[in-house]
Image (cartoon, rainbow, N blue to C red; front, side, top):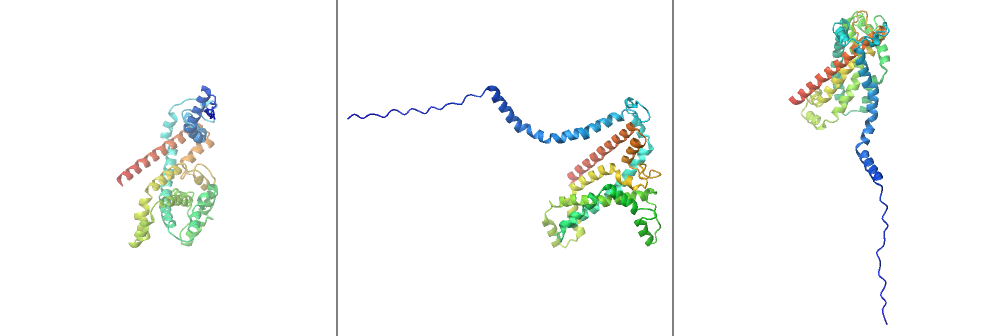
Amino acid sequence: MAVIAPPPVLPERRETPPAKPAKVERWSVLRRKFDVSGTPYLYIAPFFVVFAAFGLFPLLYTGWMALNQWNRDIPGSDHTFVGLGNFVRLFHDDYFWNALFNTAVIGVLSTVPQLLLAMWIAHLLHRKMRGRTLLRMGVLLPNITSVAAVGLIFAQLFGRDLGLINWVLSLVGLGKVDWQAGTWQSWVALAVILTWRWTGYNSLIYLAGLQAVSDDLYEAADLDGASQFRKFRTITIPALRPTIIFSVIMSTIGTIQLFTEPLMFNPGMSPTGGDSRQFQTLAMYVYEQFWTHGKYSYAATVSWAMFMIIVLAVGGNYLLSRRIRSSS
């Protein structure tokens, strides 16, 4: 009986997919490359668009205005090119130097006690205590209050006749102080307002910096019998050195831009900062030149001077911070 061999098994035929056109393949490669290298730029593009519209364009436009003689009382003067004439005039402007001096003094009187108090409050809030979260939230309340309301309330508190501050001074035998009329008095009053408003904000920044400090340092100091002040001086301040530099830079920028508090502190809310311009700041001087006198180009010149002062102040703080960091 003959054995019939089974038929050979043929390999299964697989249909190869049709090749993609070269143009489609090239488009897929480009899309993958863009997804990897181009998509991150789309995510950050809104910031640059907003910055260009509300930051870079106003900066360049005020720079162009500063090079012209644009005055509201002179029609067609917006295209009168004067070059650096406005800056030369600014250099000889006594009111500008007075506003700069007022701004600097108010900044020093408010920044130094403000940052010292903020460091001490942060040091206390860093300790383990009951209601610590509630206290941390409470120190931020002055900062979230309306700045216009703060200015008006403190203007009433520092009132000459019916102010609460003068009433307290009269109880201890001191005479009434005209806080708005005097030079040093107005500086001190504005420094108190700024200290009250921004101390809590800076204390939370310092508190965030203290979170990175190991508790072992404080525990070792407790075992050695160190007092709170010694721990504050030998542990807290050195640990907060980078944060202190940052807060000094931000306080400097905020001081140069100081406007609402002194404007509301003036009883008539005049941008002159008192009858003798005793507490007029740079921002108030810009407001006066632009809105009161209609000297648009000169106001832009003062604004650019403020910008350059901020750049110099930030650069000086940066160099100082590098020197402190290298020495330590």
